[in-house]
Structure formats: C-alpha cells, structure tokens
Image (cartoon, rainbow, N blue to C red; front, side, top):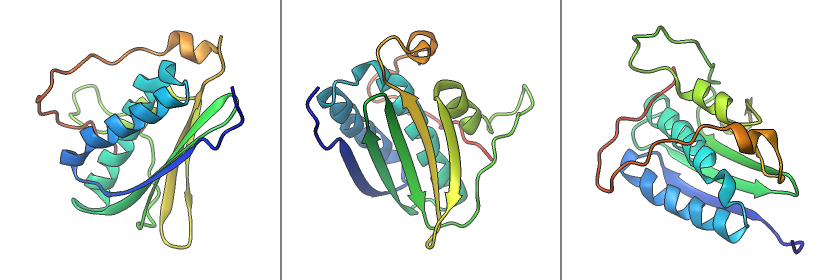
Length: 156
C-alpha cells in the first residue's frame, strides 16, 4: 500500500442520534484505507466509547474521535473534557449495563485511558495485518435493521 496519511479526526457531541452517522463515516474511511476486515470490531468499540461519553460526561458532551492507521494497527481515540478515567468492570450476569469496556477489551488488541490537560482520552487498537489471529477470531456483531432504535451497552 502507498505511504499515505491515514489519519482522521471528527469533533462531535456524544448524542446517540449521531452515532449512526459517525459509524458510516468511519466505515467509509476504513474501506478507503483497505481495512474493511476490521470494520465490525472498530464500529463496536467506537459506539461503546461514545456511549460512555454520553452517559458519564453528558448527554451533549463535546468529544473528538481520532483514527490513525499504520502498517499493522488501527488506533481509535475518543477524547472528552472529563478528568474521570473509565474502569472496566465485570458486571453481574443480570445487569443491564456495564459491559461496554469489557466488549471493547474483547474485540481489540489493547485499550487504555490517559489524562490530558483538558480531559481524558480513551483509546483502543485493532490489529490490521493480514493473518492476524484477532482478525480471524473476533465475533461479528449482529446486523441491525435500518431505523431500529438501540439502547447502547454502557460501562460504568
């Protein structure tokens, strides 16, 4: 593949009504970057991180989504203005929420969070190299009919 700048940044508010548009934008970038094989896990991770901003920072909280692809890894970052770092937890089997970061951890190579001058960044990476074990073993999320309203799975 040509050596090209494979970076993208989007500023948005963490309103669930915008998540579908964000997913379409990211999907288009992944196709353009020849990374369609990691679309499902990337979109799942992004949706979970944006849902966490919505729930824990605010319904209309501003945030920034960043994508960066290199030779064998896609890095996704969601930055917001809250200094509160997220923590993955193991929810009880009957809990309705609290699985967001556990899902992200299950489908990505690694994830983490760090504080900055104006808030925090939560990030995850996805292996993109052909033949990667993660590409071959990641479960594929179920397709949802257009127009369906979903309740996000949110981590505490």
